[in-house]
Image 1: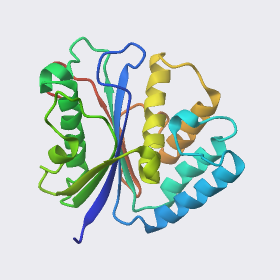
Image 2 (image 1 turned 90 degrees about the horizontal axis):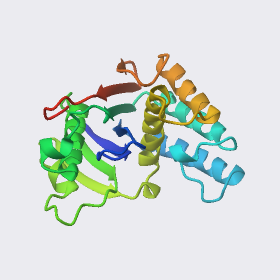
Image 3 (image 1 turned 90 degrees about the vertical axis):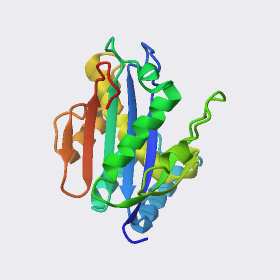
Length: 238
C-alpha cells in the first residue's frame, strides 16, 4: 500500500518500580524505504565484526572503547538518510503517583497502551504502518497479545515481535533510545559516569542540535528526531 512505513520499536528498563532503573523508555524508528538503510547497516556491521568480534551486534550496552567508533558511525548513518524518523518517550518513574499498573490494569497492559500511543503519534500524518517490535514475553495470566492489540489501530497493517538480534533496525532503535535514557540517568545521578558512552551521547546531541538529550525537543528537518519526557501524575498517561 502506498504510504506504508515500517515502525521498529524497542524498549529499555522496566515499568515496575525499581530504584536501580528509575526510567523506562520506548523508542520508535520509522522508515518507508529500507533499501539504503539496510545496505549501510550491513556494511557497518561487517566492518565491526571484522575489527571487534565476529558475532558483534549493535547494542547500547556494548558501547566501549574498542567499539565507540562503530556507534559514532551508526549515529552519523542515521543522519545521512533523510527518510528516517525516530521518537523516544522516556518515563520518569520516581514520582509518587507513577502507577501504570493501577491506571491500565497491569504493567503488561500499560506497556501495550504506551506502545499504541507512540505508534499513533508516529502515524499522525495519516501514513500506514507495519510494526516490528523487540520481543517481550507476555505474562501467562494476560489474554492480551501485543501484536493483536497494536493491530487495532486503523492504520496499522500488521505487527510482529522479533528478538532484536533478528533485525538491525530494532538494534538501531536500541542504540538511539539507550543514549537518550543514559543521558537521563547521568543527569539524575543514577548511572555511573562512563566517558565512552557519554562521548557517544554528546555526539548524538550535537547531530540533533541540542546541548542535552534528556529534555523535550523535536528536530523536524529530515531526519526527524524527537524526545518526550513523561512524568505521570496519577492519571492515565501519556
